[in-house]
Length: 479
Ligand SMILES: [Zn+2]
Image (cartoon, rainbow, N blue to C red; front, side, top):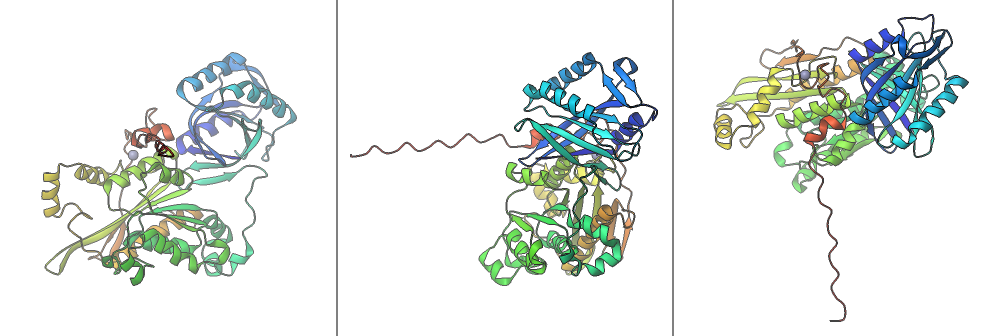
């Protein structure tokens, strides 16, 4: 089992300021976290830094730090009451390669054994930071009653930073793939390509736009791609869905399955890691897959689904890239067309709810049936009962604009543009301002916002668990 920590930008700044304020002696603080759990991984979502006041220290020297038991006890009570996990953090201010000392080993073991009865659901871990915020981390695996490593720390900055624990740097990039990606390595470097190859991306929507994006990400060598779309292919998709064949459309294949099959064929045998998931992304099963990804890409025409993806991204601290296209035409004359790409880093950029566009669309979808009909007739709602114009070149441009922002976000090879609009008739792409709403319920630093709330924040969105199926009563025998 392995651990990972995700920290929003503001929390990271506070953590740095707290830990590095005095490098003449060791400093301690605590991180209150939500957790996301799977069989192989525990993700700690840092919500709050709790510094230790002077009176909270029992001992504090250049090579030793200890907090008073009453201080820790009060924190544990709060964790139990509010459902938080706890990460102890302290510094080894003399080094850039911090390792837990023998004293740390003894004291962590003692602490974790004390809190073992609180787990599950409580999780307890510790981090030691050097003077440049390099770190080593571990948490208590209560099933094995042993330490498990925290290997990675993600700072949700713009662009996001991935930091690996001392001794946990990822393996060298497989040389077999180097020939395939040679021309790209020349564009954004071997380390940039390696970062793409380690990435797990969920692409939601495998239609005209989503298939363009998935195609670009597959060619770029993104490590794992999950294609989520419950829809089946129709003949009217064949003008724009990448990778779909006539035979598949005639047989009503799932879009996600057809796309995954095609894209896997392009890749070297060892990296055929493109997986279809032909279900509604809002089902709990799909959520577990979404939460396992490093990045979510949304290419859907439903405002409700986009808002859902935005909410998942905020709660789980996963960067989210959203794209959309639209064309309006009358009597064979194209009147309006364009698309947009928004890069959302939770807590660092505007989220979808911050931007008015998202709110307006969301409102439209919640109209009464009569209002909706009027709205559809008026051409205000897209992707609904009345088929809208859809053209491959617009999908191609906007899909690739998204792929480019994704590459910049991951490799850092150029500055990310948080919001780009492409105007089809004017033939130009331009950045637009997407302002953060300081009071946004989803992404602000407000204590009650959904930022980093994990499943707590998502509870209202999840369908209540279905009652277990009753086993049929066996028919009486011998009658
Ligand atoms: Zn927001």
